[in-house]
Image 1 (cartoon, rainbow, N blue to C red):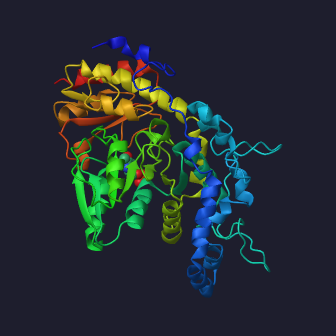
Image 2 (cartoon, rainbow, N blue to C red):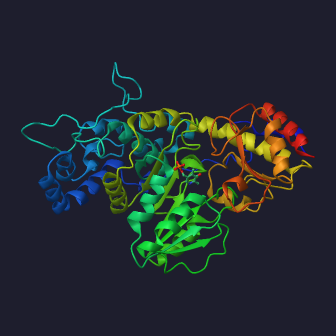
Image 3 (cartoon, rainbow, N blue to C red):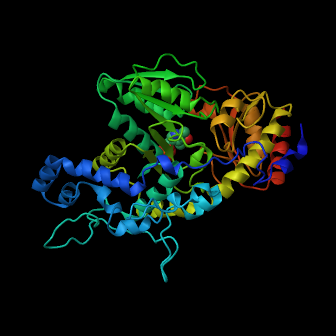
Length: 469
Ligand SMILES: *Cc1c(COP(=O)(O)O)cnc(C)c1O
């Protein structure tokens, strides 16, 4: 056990485990967000039949249908002002002007924040609107908000921010599950096959096995580390890497290439790493989908999800899905998420430093049977994780003797809250078997918060000592 190991891994120490070197952005491959949105708009608009059908029914649906969908709102109109990094002139904004080489801290602070206007707040306040005023004569118009299910400047602003960080266009949802189910249900048809992680987030698997076979979709599961069979008959491969809670890692670029060779699509659940930790779209995935409830927003006070993609048709289908099914976030949640995003770099740096120190402590403590953290040399996921990830998340998984040992650990610790979820400011931990995970009785997922490393290490050491019967 190296007791003082925390000090060596301070925030901002680029040589620390988990602080993988900065990866250059790739603005060259990326269509400016507004350009992508414009295409999505046309795609929707071209479906004239839908607009007609909605128009015939009257009411607020008109506005959505006739305008070809919500995509308009973020284009040339007022919403465009939010997109300081993707202005209406199509230059691509800050990214194209070279901010692609800026650091993560700068990027999260400025993501989706509009150009400075004297007298305005830095981040626009939330806009609460169900119907918006309609031009009584001209009726619905492109770029003018019509109805809150499809038009809200506050969540458009958040989408601009997350889209910049993921390197694609973003559609936000009310929760991670709303986002994941949107990807599954908008892409899969009868006769298709989907492959999901057998060791990933259990509700994704539960949703798929409960709802997809009845729709004629074959569901296969694979452990995250593989080995993967042929993937050429797969319509959608959903990966979760690092997997939750086992923290295994797979090679996104390799599996994406193999799936796309057969004409399939690849989605990556990017919840645990966040877009600062991993950029699935750069690695060849079609979708990056995530729960923003966890580290992305990081304050344990809200639920939110999102889907990002580069292909205009794929993201238009997701946006249309959301408009039809209605799983939108509230304006206040969207604003709170955007506000929280500005500290993501700082929070992750401390969480990773804390996890590095905690993993060392766990590895040397007699109460601990095994420990997994992909940033620790010698971990089975270390090589793959350091190759494809930009940072290693602050979640550590370890095994104590049994339930009683975990009970003693959790009741002794002052700083580690017993709670499910992860990625928040407060360190927290839970025994996974209590949720029905296929895990040993004593397996604990510990999410390192942003407490001082020395305090957290002292507290966790005391709790581990108490865990020994
Ligand atoms: C929490 C979580 C989800 C679900 O997100 P919610 O916001 O709770 O709906 C999906 N995937 C992973 C990996 C998660 O940790």
